[in-house]
Length: 106
Image (cartoon, rainbow, N blue to C red):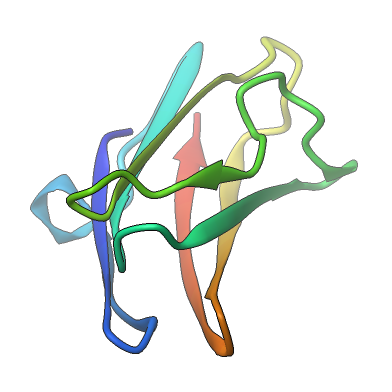
């Protein structure tokens, strides 16, 4: 899955769609790119049937000078097929925003 989600000032979610406006199936990996406020700190959580993913690439990141952040992670071959939620929480100073999207494992 490749997605571009946008979180505009003051960190309000806007978008969160995969390419074509729908979540794309992925195997064996996934990617999400967001647009937010430059310098915002963002954390991502991907939830599967077994609970939150512990994949190495799902770490908090700081938005670059253009406000972009990208995450990539591996999806295990034993991951239960289905549509799984992704939540990104961003903060810069007192401003906060949440982006909710999902992706499909087949």
